Length: 257
Image (cartoon, rainbow, N blue to C red; front, top):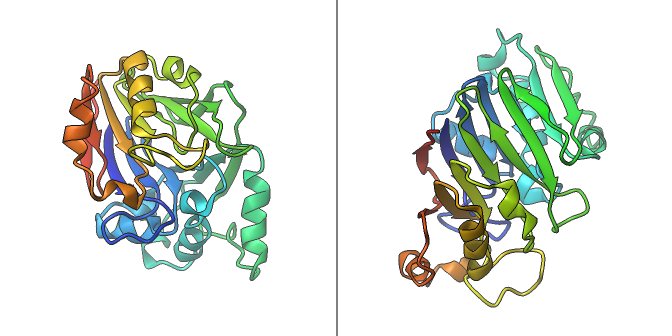
């Protein structure tokens, strides 16, 4: 697998961190993990083949994770690069993703499904495996953030594994869900003193990493409170048992089994 970080930030405007989006190349094709408002622009900036994107997975319905979905499809409907496309685009999400899509579409009668290629919307259920792409398995697990929010575990044909929590409060079962994966991507909204229970701060994220024992971990979804913090210095105080990477917009990672 190969991962490109499109956005490592939040809804809060930031000069270096845009809203959530992660482009993942797998053995079966490409998938966009979350589609924040900046994701369409960021895919173009990173020169990614957005017109050939195979699938999108939406973790929950906060705008910094799904707000770019409608604008992306409004663009593919008329883009020159998609004129010859015939393969379907699959959009996965939790219960309610179909209704969300229809509400986006109804704002201006965009006809977002009226593309040159099929658009298939598929709702997934917690802990029920599904085919994300050919030869690529997905399974989701409920997280304590919003009523619909989920993390995802992905395994491709080479048995390379990745878990992406998206937004979550502290939830110890996530460590078991991500046990020994090749890359564990966790949100880490605040370095300390988080203002609520629906996100993680560093000590909680590091606890989950130590319990999960992944090959590598990556922290992301940073609020501006991180701006004055030395990421490396803070990580070292927890004596991590694996490499812990700071997500930055444009970062590329190769993930091997």
